[in-house]
Image (cartoon, rainbow, N blue to C red; front, side):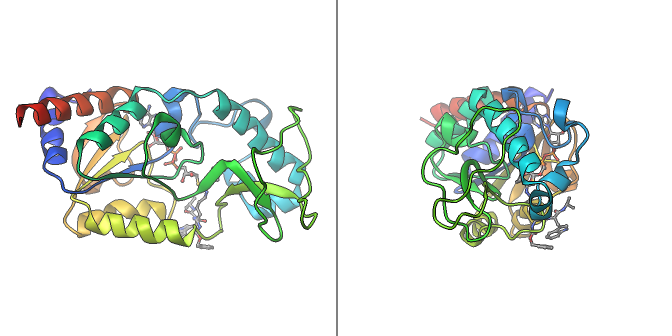
Length: 257
Ligand code: BV8
């Protein structure tokens, strides 16, 4: 676990930052019971590779299998409760002049916890659209609760429904990319939490921030592939480290009067 000195130093960097960008990956949701991509797929899905399933080709090849995989993930996410690390980020947002979260996660837990400025780089499992024309599905994603089910047809054009997420080989949403890269160029601190730094172009953000003069702080039980960019490495779980960081920031802000 990180020393009190390293937490205090990181809190000082945050307290003196005009703009803070938080970049989160699947590790942020691990303590809320959602497995990371690194974690081996479980049960029915153990035999498949997420990078196969999370593609348009995989969906077209077997819509029922991919739709059911997302339905199973959606059910798990529906039970997930944001852990203390999420609430710590909400507290930091309230105490700092500017804090935005850019997430690779599709589970919506940051917004559920109360974070108000969240950029979803890879879309959301809580939304669906049709495969051929991207007509948005109005309202909650239909789920008949079966272990396996076929994707429902789009009510407008009849093509099968797919999750409104960015699959491998697909472009990221333009507006999200524009905003995320601009925030990375403008931030004074980038707090990197729970990502292995293996999926692009999201993995480029910390380098964009560091090149522009920002300090990168990594929070992860293991050093990620981006750890070399970190000015400080707070080794530990998000649910344990972020609340300590928020508490140190609060003490400091109160100390400033
Ligand atoms: C694209 C949604 C243009 C779906 C996801 C260079 C540039 C551009 C593209 C590429 C490139 N090189 C390769 C590519 C192609 C590809 C890519 O990156 N491939 C990788 C595998 C090499 N990128 C793309 O296809 C992207 N599209 O660039 O379009 C284009 C088009 C065609 C050809 C070329 C370019 C689209 C990528 C988005 C894919 N969609 N998600 C879904 O979820 O089903 S990606 C998905 O996997 C996640 O969203 C996330 O991004 C990624 C998993 O990474 P992490 O979040 O980091 O999680 P991971 O499990 O890896 O690690 C967990 C971490 O948590 C670990 O470090 C662990 O130590 C830590 N941890 C564990 N417990 C805790 C913890 N941390 C804190 N607390 C804890 N308790």
